[in-house]
Length: 136
Image (cartoon, rainbow, N blue to C red; front, top):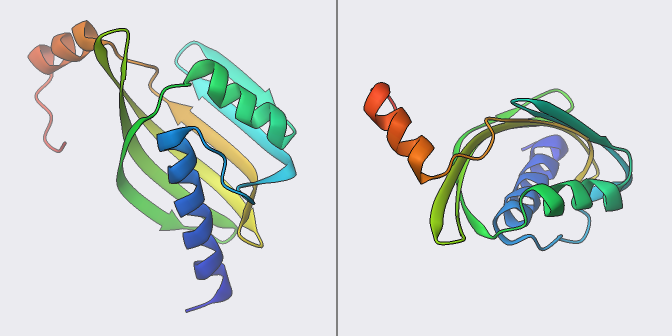
């Protein structure tokens, strides 16, 4: 196994821990990490670890579960496709995301996030009634 593969596994594990708990594992982000988040009707960026963590905390502060669908190693890091589920204000919420991250020494140095936006229970029911999914 190459060093890049080991670095990628460590970085992915740290990222999933962060997404599920909100706790920031040591070494997750470089101090000068660049973050670019694309939402359905908005876009956010940050250029420090502190600001990247604040973007997540302000937009998605709730612990939950991450179901990883695919992880692909790239020349510079990884891409991960996943869904998140969490509870908030008596509802079960859902979103699908894809992250492309560049990694150096087990640490994320650049990350782009593409998110469907958060779906409340009514949106999930509407979607399930209108669209038969071929895969989960």
